[in-house]
Length: 253
Image 1 (cartoon, helix red, strand yellow):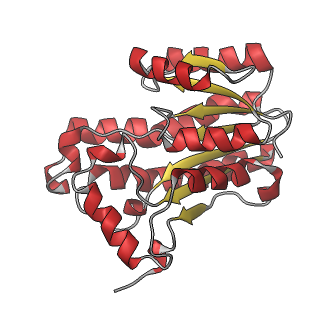
Image 2 (cartoon, rainbow, N blue to C red):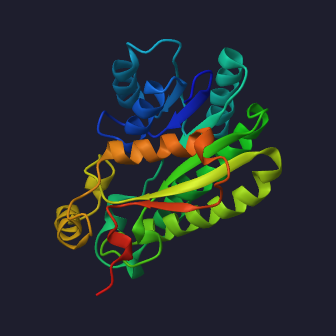
């Protein structure tokens, strides 16, 4: 499905990361992959995870540092000469902003969450565009808190709203270049970043009880959806937010 395709994965922290599940699904279907990391600890994690992968690139990339972003894409260009898809699974807000009331969000926490979790998508899309010479696909990760109030999600919900809106505007801008941009709104999964949200275990229990499928989604199910979105099977889909949450989003009172 992805033979002779090159992808760039942002956001792998460990083997439980949604980004890693996406990478595994894409790799199993023939893609060559470049991975980015921030900091020495994550470099060690990614290096260990990718040690048996052939023709893989691992490069540093802190999205708050434009020179690192530029260098990461230059490395991809040098090694592969092109880019066919990009998976954006980056989000961050200070822990204190993910509990209590949104009203108490500090200016610094707000700006940090929006810069890393939302602005990084158009930032990376701009760098990816010249490498997607024959078109491509960009996929980002959102969450239900973008459109409904989720207790303690707070500023991250606002950031995810901006991310979903950015997805639509980017889809419009990049469509003429045959580059598609979509978001996956995944149900909560026990990842490193999710553990930063207070009472995450309560969310998981509630979704298991309320969703039509009576269970929580797995990271691999999200990865399989990303695989579909970066493949030619989704060639007419762009600007969409696709829910992968066992149907929880359709439920009312």
